[in-house]
Length: 150
Length: 100
Image (cartoon, rainbow over all chains, first blue to last red; front, side):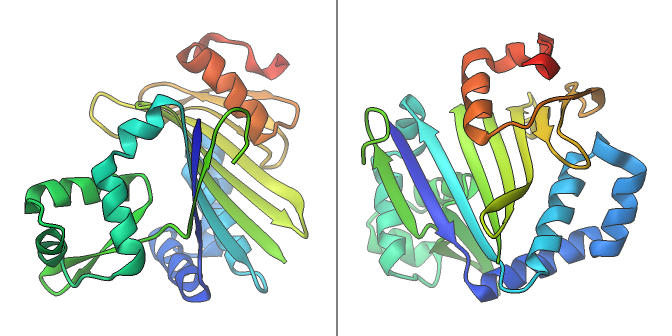
């Protein structure tokens, strides 16, 4: 069994991503200079450079996929986490507290599940004033069984 | 039209492949497939990486993220890398990957 979770970036999200990479690495030119010096010793610089260059082109698209195979599916995607994802795909709670209250779950358990989902790229936790606002970042979830049949 | 595809494939709870492909009108112009391993400190560190930056090659890293080997390697697809990583997992570090 294989689970594929896909996120298609909107134009605004791509712009945010481009700005975030530029801010972290200093822009295209400094990045290319840095890579010329360090080569493959820091592979994340090469990935950042290629991503930034592509994002700076005309009409780019950005797709993110997370893929689980076999037992890993169930370890990461527990029923409770699937329930959270399902809820977040149709609602935008203003805080984790509100989400926990709506789902009648303990705050800490919800927070831990959201962090686990964020770590595998399925949820964004955006800070607004003194609270974290959770949003689902996946646009598609596909489940494949036996050799790729959906 | 330039397409950027970032993919994360979980091999095991402590092992994953982070892939980046850049396609120009459906033609793959850049790829990097990094087999990452979770360290005892909880962060992810590259162990083996295939990419075609400048030329297709494969890099190996030690547990402190230091580059320990670079070898030319035929172009790889993500499916090929996932298959190799799933079969050999951490033994990849001891293998001659340039000849695979």
